[in-house]
Length: 145
Image 1 (cartoon, helix red, strand yellow):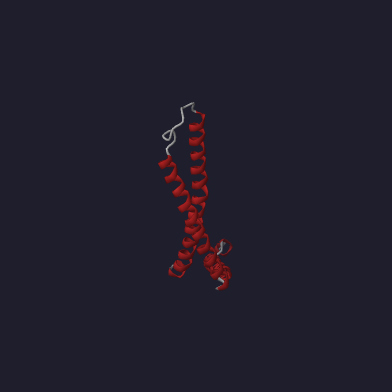
Image 2: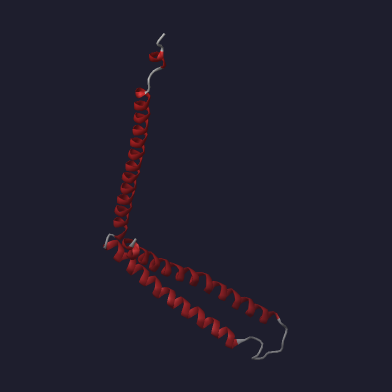
């Protein structure tokens, strides 16, 4: 219900930080690998010296993306750590344990009530069946002989 909205919001924020950092950790090495392959390919070509054998502007753009991604990742990591430390200070995770224990206890109580109601219904049914049988005349009592 509504009680879980702030908890879910917090988890989403943490997941967003972790997802962003993971994406950066995957993206930058891929871009670096691409640049290395492009540079190696350019170096292997037997071309006369010149300034147009390698896409310097493209490489510069990729390096800028890597630099910005690295800086953004570092900032996200700082934000993540600050939020994590605050959650620890606020005993957020301990409160989750208490909430889940309370929920489990409530569920067990509800289950016990349902089981008791079912048992009561069965006992009533058995009692009714026994009561009906005791009201019937017995076949032995019908022998007028």
